[in-house]
Amino acid sequence: MPFGPFEAMKAPAAEITPASFQSLRDRLTADGVHSLLAQFTDVHGVARGKLVPLNQLELLMTEGVGFAGPSIWGTGLARTGPRAEYYGRGQIDTVRALPWMPGIARVVCDGYVAGEPFDACPRQVLKRQLARLAERGWTLRTGIEPEFFLLRRTADGYDPADPHDRLDKPSYDLKSLPRQREFLHQLADGLTRCGLDVFQIDHEDAHGQYELNFHHADALTSADHLMLFKLAAHTLAEQHGMVFSMMPKPFANQPGSGMHFHASLWNAAGAGRTTLNARCVFDDASQDLSVIGRQFTAGVLQHADALCAIAAPTVNSYKRLTVGESITGTTWAPAYVAHGPNNRTALVRTLKGRIEWRVPDASANPYLATAALIAAGLDGIARQLDPGPACTDDLFPLSLSQIRERGIAVLPQSLSEAVDALEGDEVIRAALGDTLSREFIRLKRAEWVGYARHVSAWELQRYADQF
Image 1 (cartoon, rainbow, N blue to C red):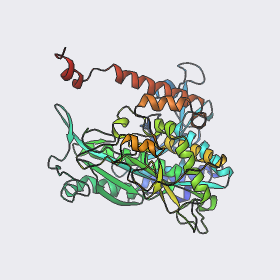
Image 2 (image 1 turned 30 degrees about the horizontal axis):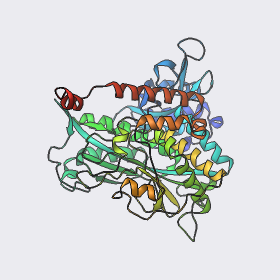
Image 3 (image 1 turned 60 degrees about the vertical axis):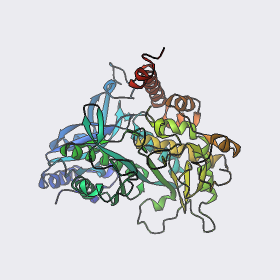
Image 4 (image 1 turned 90 degrees about the vertical axis):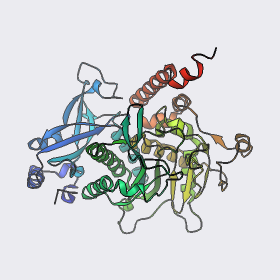
């Protein structure tokens, strides 16, 4: 049986001894592991790293392994001097052998520069916000729901990998789902053997679109799990001759891929899913959300525009964040700043003891999205904000004038608008930190300019001989 979660190594770093490293190294060797995949995440939410021989385990966990800092998106590091080097320092409780890559074990790394936690490492950004919760005796649990496409390359671009996936309403399709059963089984089995609690897989609402769900966990673990999911899916899809895609909206006439966040605050003793005496801070016997839950929700609504830049961080994201018709009759993407009980047309769907933040799409960096969500929610709590009346209407069929009559705001409709909102939001920028917020804004402005200056096939077809 391949090496799985190593429960014995969950002691604080100060308690880890050379004997502990040796024990872990011996167990990995016995399971056929010869190399460690030292993995970190860049500002775009893309996994980066390098392979490290197993005999360098202790070095990886103590000093870390080096990378050229300026070669990593979003670091803003210099090309020379003591701050030119980025070190990925492995976190020992994240070691997992990868069933889809025999002989390799993945290790999640935190970023360090000049011997200190690097302020622009997305995982360190999230840890800073989690520390703010811990000061109040709280922890955050999240359940992240990744939707994705399985595509094949064609001469004209990309099509769904399954050419027979053509239903007018493909959601929960039990004809297409079995045709991808081998890939989906390998993906679910591999993740389960790595310690994720996979509990359902379905065909989503677009051709070639699927969703795999794993149970909630503490927020840092959930983000680590999401990155492991992406690593597995990319590798396995390529082995099957397909392209795994978390592009938010690859097809104009079909729904896009969301990455909804289910979130709830718990007392610190309730950090684990099975911890006794856990107490959900969002729960209230008399209503879906407690006062703190409502204030947290109000903060998310208050900072919705800036959060949009983090949760919907690409040009393509805003093709999804529109309300309109698709082949299935809906887009399932929230464009309106509202909250409501079990309302999937609102930005925040409220449920018993938790909220579902429906803005994030599949391209979002899970560490940054979670950190920004915490910052917004804590601001709502600190200021005792009220989210206003719950919305029980189906917002999608309403006209823009009807939406405005209800006093409901509309999310930014382009990456440029969202980045402007982020630049003007001190709370969310402070959560990201000076370095990362500056780099994020710079990179996203460049992305928007590149898109705005690109001449598309649509423009040529429409204008080339019109005038």
